[in-house]
Image 1 (cartoon, one colour):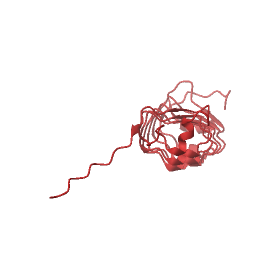
Image 2 (cartoon, rainbow, N blue to C red):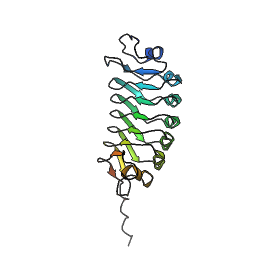
Image 3 (cartoon, helix red, strand yellow):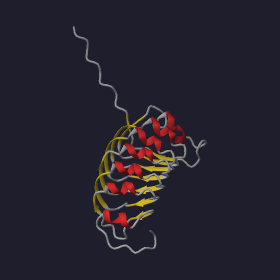
Length: 197
């Protein structure tokens, strides 16, 4: 917790004993290795900040158990693999920062279950595919950052699915701000072969 002196750490695992409700990065960012699955058992954890370290490997599916969390920052590391669909259980989460990693694969449709999100940062990864329409359930969203991936634009003026149009429409949400400049257009279908003679 805040105010408790922590020894210099190079692994995440010892943090399990120091952060029952609040887990912030060490003053010297030397944490390396992987995120322990046991971290998903910290049911009272409300704040997790492990940004700007040297963490690698996948985000454990057990992170879906961090249901009390309001903020999770594990950006600016070297995390890889897909975003676990189990994270869709985090309905109390307000701020999720996974940017500047090497996460890949498609955005899980279950991500729409995180209905409490006000800020979502997924930029500078290797995510592919379309933006799930389920993200239209983000009615509290204020900042959505998706740039520098390989996500496809929708065929709408904003490039977002119709369900997310409120993020691009200031009269509906005057706080909304969305970074989408590097979204790619959806690929065109391949041309049909000429008819055989």
